[in-house]
Length: 195
Image 1 (spheres, rainbow, N blue to C red):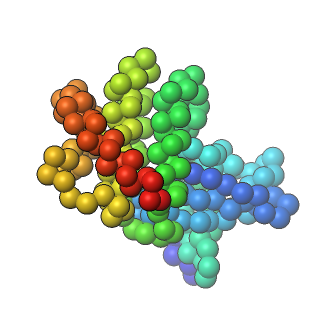
Image 2: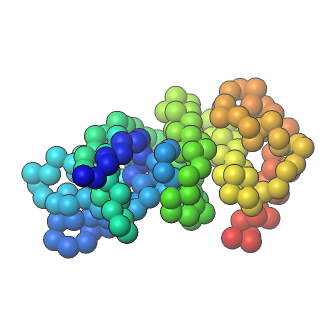
């Protein structure tokens, strides 16, 4: 009998294979970035397809196969695209962050901070005013720096230390970023040129 694992995950990407099956790339808190298949998910009667929409946070049950995870059930918790679709600036920030994680993270690299950072950013984006572009860009910059730091691309810097340890997007955090934003952007741009 196979052990069933249940975790929360963000559906990052999917690809069709076969007539009605899909392969998914899912960022999970418990297992990192995983690749998993869902059988028959393209059929109209599939119960799983709503829980496996791209950019959805979902509760996913899986079994570990020899080469790939297999999805046994999926329940949508929140659809990022639906919740942010009327706010293009916010949605674009979220998509850029997810794309960066997809690019940097190895499959099954168990580092829960990646999931936590994405979840925190999403909570911030849901509640923040879309017209405050400065605050949105500061939140994106902080999130990128956390991802690069956790991935080992960004070394220790005493000016950024406290900021990189928080999942807080408070006014105080945003004001602290304003003071050193140029220095932060310089560091990020140096790293991104190397990637």
